[in-house]
Image 1 (cartoon, one colour):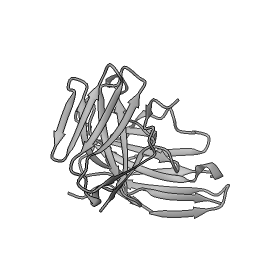
Image 2 (image 1 turned 180 degrees about the horizontal axis):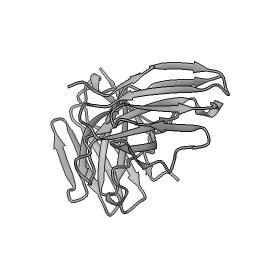
Image 3 (image 1 turned 90 degrees about the vertical axis):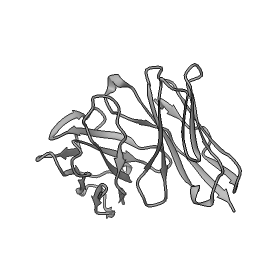
Length: 113
Length: 116
């Protein structure tokens, strides 16, 4: 049972434009969400997180938006750079499960120079 | 600050053989996780340790997988005997473990296992 879903396996964007990566979840108890970035042959690297008490969190070029009613979050990258080309995973957890993360299947982002 | 270390980086074995992976977490991190990532999927938690105790091993196939963290620092994950479907990347992660609520997990580079 996939509780966190990333329905777009891949995304291509021109350099300088906005990249929008989407993530949906089914468990209404999830209250903490993260985005990880993964380059080939490396482990996932933490990018940005958001708690369910917020609907937006921003860090430089990266912004995460949370829509609790729709059980949807998105990652915006503005402006996109070639170095952003990687696989992006969203993850979610619920306080009652401690720190167990549930990951989506990932979206491969390609930023075209 | 050194990150999470894992070895080996790659391993090829035949089915029914055994294999072991090693992980050294970030210094001072009390919580350690092992994940399995099958090609095209997201990481799936196998086991979570808090110091040297198991917090969650509900998704660990205990008939063939075992893990230990005897001194509360580094950890080993073993598969015996291996099956073809165990081919995956095995990721180790750690977090400070200072709070009961959610913490960011920091991942190692992973061990890529191929079972032939």
